[in-house]
Image 1: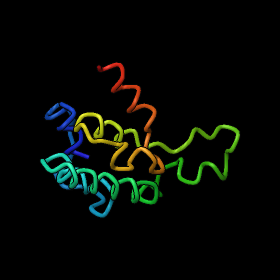
Image 2: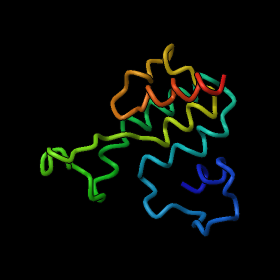
Image 3: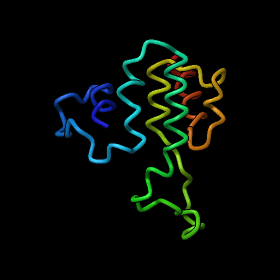
Image 4: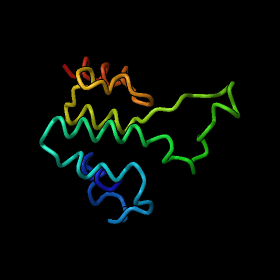
Length: 116
């Protein structure tokens, strides 16, 4: 998570541990994803991140929320994956990322449209 916050411009603004509390979480992909200069490697890492994203959030209040509170269920969205795809100019259509579960493809398309 520190890598994501640093990449988004929060470096030094928030107190974040250098080492992750949960080293096996899906966030372990962020340093390599952000630092890689190879498009196919970024795409591969983002796909792997999305594959692991939901199950790595077992300790959150919203895990399995669709089973308990169907009336107020808001969906499962990895907005940080969308932000990274947008900022790193990852081709979500060609790579198939747009069709992956939990990826907010419509938000990324909209952001790219208004960004021009």
